[in-house]
Image 1 (cartoon, one colour):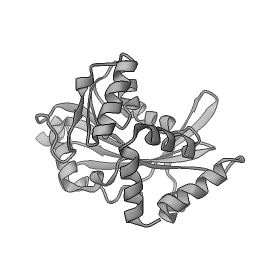
Image 2 (cartoon, one colour):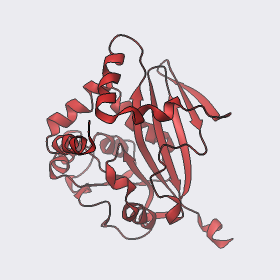
Image 3 (spheres, helix red, strand yellow):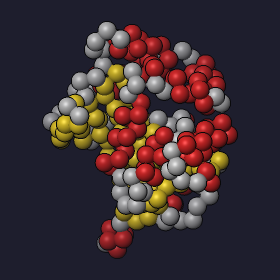
Image 4 (tube, rainbow, N blue to C red):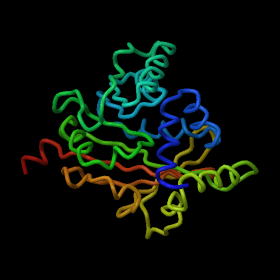
Length: 246
């Protein structure tokens, strides 16, 4: 699929909540929400900003977990859908979802402890976006980007779904998983009888187009694996007060 056709496909999805729900559920074997929730153990502090909240499911999860959250979403259709999700789940007022641009955030400097973006579009590669994220993060704050994920070819259904992913995203979507890393730092956890392995991968090519260092954010790259999938996470950490004093 060509980049222009892929962009048209995604723009169509962002305009219809029902198509978006289908596209983020069925082709990913119902794992999309699991991948989104990988941000939860990585959160820093209490005040969270989500960029590109889509249908608002993760935003509602964060609010129900006790975090103080706001969301900025560009698509009017997704803003309406996310507000409906908050009202349906009694998670918070609709006004906490703001229609706006990641390149011009409507918040003062040092407003948030963590900024979250799961499966973002091209806006995450824009230097203006990262500049704004750095501005609204407090010293010691963290940016969490779940940039991509793919299924493993296990079982009967997932090889077929993986073929669809290749047609839409191209072979580059699997390039990071094919690379061998030298002695990654890894930890293993078990949740609901499923084993998750998290690997710290210095120099990971995935996420390399996000200009974190340009704005003083320290990069960390992680791959989270289970038997059924792999997820690629990029973290950007802002220097704390003590670091700035040195």
